[in-house]
Image 1: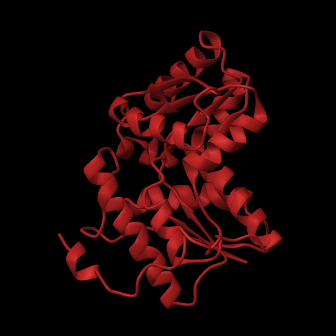
Image 2: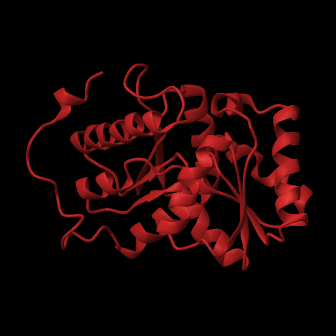
Length: 243
């Protein structure tokens, strides 16, 4: 089984880190490819609506490139805004899962309530949009921005860990969260350390998405092509996407 994990920002260091976290939960029979756009072909970090628009294009181009090379059995979009998720599902009939979608689903199975700890507070609006889309508004009792920029998580030192830990502890202690959702793929390597400290399940969306996408692939469950996710009209718009 081959799974392609797409980090839609251009950080190769972060992509490699995310790939390592993903491989820890992928089965021994899973070939996992972690890819990202080249510089200039995607955002350096996804921290705004403009970044997210470019990220969605980067996701589409990554899937098209993978299809040209033979395709994969499933795809993971490794950005907490789930950019390009619907468009990606139009392109393939195999499972495509975003890490926010996966993390919220798994957290809701782990407890009755959860809290989200993410990067910048300006991204909380998108997180709330996704909570509504995935129908977890009642389950989410807290959503906090840590103030840590995405690229600072390439090598999350003690200061970043301590800040994220403090917000996790607040969500559990003050808001009553049964579980924590980490709101950035770049936090994947902090998951186990945080869980040891806060004493509740801490869900990394990368691991959650890899687990779900491989399970769906083994079950033979892909994307329905009945209507909304049918293949898009056969026209090439790539030239209009260039910056």
